[in-house]
Length: 192
Image (cartoon, rainbow, N blue to C red; front, side, top):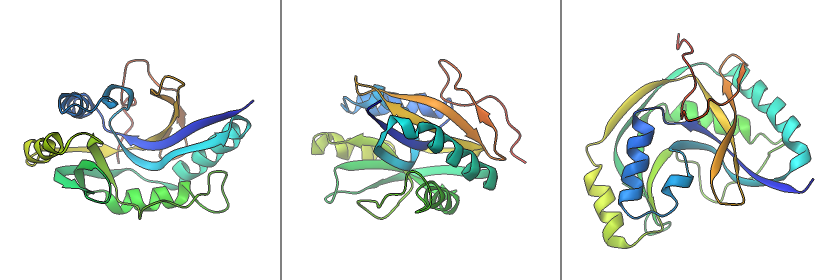
């Protein structure tokens, strides 16, 4: 079967997702249109394709234990000089994201892995571009604000073309929702 590269993340819903993706592209980040706007729970991870059913079953369990929570983005931050990244900060929902990513990567699960850096939930808006463009991203989005009720997360696979595509949504409470073509977010699920 071979290997596939997967990731697990919380999609930034519309209209925020498209706006931040367009801004990222406008700063000169060539990868912007191949990466849906998101908060990472599991970074790109190469797995044997035969493990996908077990990974999906694990994610159903993680989602079943999760509950909707408010997400709020505000202002910018950077990982420079350690890593060439400018991001929009997660100022509400960070604790829930931290809990979720630990559950996804749990040592007893099928995608147990160590992280290269300590987990810090964020939304990347510039990566690996020239310093002047990184500075511009940092400054131009410094006043950015967005909020929404987070009701689940999704499993993505990176294609041979480098584009990340959603495989499945996992709603809190344990439901699996197939991705909706052309939508960065899932249909309405109560955030009670």
